[in-house]
Image (cartoon, rainbow, N blue to C red; front, side, top):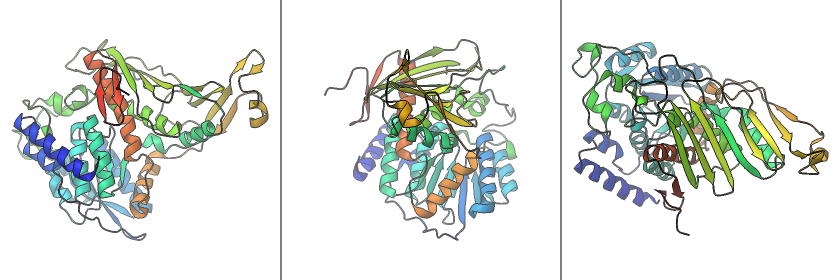
Amino acid sequence: MQPTDRRNFLKSATGTAAALGTVSSLAQTAFAAPRPAPGRVIGANDRINIGVIGCGGRGTGVARQFAEAGKTENCRIAMVCDVYQKRVNANAEHHKVKGTLDYREVLDNPEIDAVYIATPDHWHAPIAIAAMDKGKDVYLEKPMVHTIAEARQLVSTVKETKRVLQVGSQTTSGDQWAKAKKAIADGMIGDMIMSQGSYHRNSLDGEWNYPIDNAAGPTGKGEDYLDWKMWLGNATPRQFTPDRFFRFRKYWDYSGGIATDLFYHVVAPMNICWGEPQFPAKVMAGGGIYEFHDEREVPDTFHLIGDYPKGHSLVLSASLANSQHIPGLIRGHAGSLTMVEHGKFESYSPYISVRPEKRGKQYVDPTWASRFGTEDEVRINVPQEDIMQKHIANFLSCMRTRQKPTLDVETGARAQVLITMAVMSYRQGKVLYFNEKTWQVTDHPPVA
């Protein structure tokens, strides 16, 4: 998609949505595509000013990680924003900076060099695009966006504006993925056949049932005030309910549930391991609400299969009512590579291992033992690191060097397409296909 195409697409998309009454004027402003503004050239010794947009639990926590990084990386939190006044007040007080209820004030601030976006998923793309058009770099929480069309827009915007965008799945800064990539490139598993992973939790009260501040709302006074119209943005207009605001991941309007909140941490590093980020060709998904029968729309148990055009599959499973993981591994014709033996993709793994395939005493690859120095499993050590701080430091470094970050927009988009298609497959009850050339999803294979 060329820059002019992006602008025409955005104009058409927001115009149509506005006519249908499904996008607010605030969201239209975010999706508008003015001529991109140049960002400040940041020298090696210049301090980087970060604006935080979204100060819930995740936003508050990672903002403090940015502040901690400032001790060595010369950055600081310079402004904070949320639609809930209590959160604005708390974060503004903690960082001793100005706070606002309107993200546009952050984007219009010439002192802000980059924004950290930790809003609900449906606001990720509008704010990120508006930020880049304002000359800001972006650290964007996972999932990268809410729809496939938004993923395409974000890829195009990064190319046009030449801004740095890091997707905030810090898992990808772990060293095991690069080591796995090298092992595959060295031929340790032969032709790749299938990757597998999981994300299991056992939540007694039902996942994403976060605490509710009952005084908060659009009629609240003082710090209890909450700008519901702003929060809805381009989502379906609905009356305010505390559950939708505080527990948004349970609702399709704002989230993809397990697929987007949890599987993103699996699919993104898999794309790094494979050596070349890839779009899926065919996706199918299943599951259901088996245990937690509350207000939620999203399933508490979910699984997907993604088939890739280069001849391998990705199989993922998750439940929020059972904590037993499946090892994260990649199977090849000549061997199997395990990156996360305990299955917890966001936890430290002290090594990766490669086990050769044999038929009886015969290796599938007869040169395996001579090339890798053993007839048994090979273990490759992985250093223990603070991957959150490493991911932030990588983003700040790329702001200075203008290099591509660890989880760049194109790798992020390929992960996003798989998990968004899985949500679509589950909701439609269909096997779906992806046309990489047109970014179109259909229920039949693309015509060659």
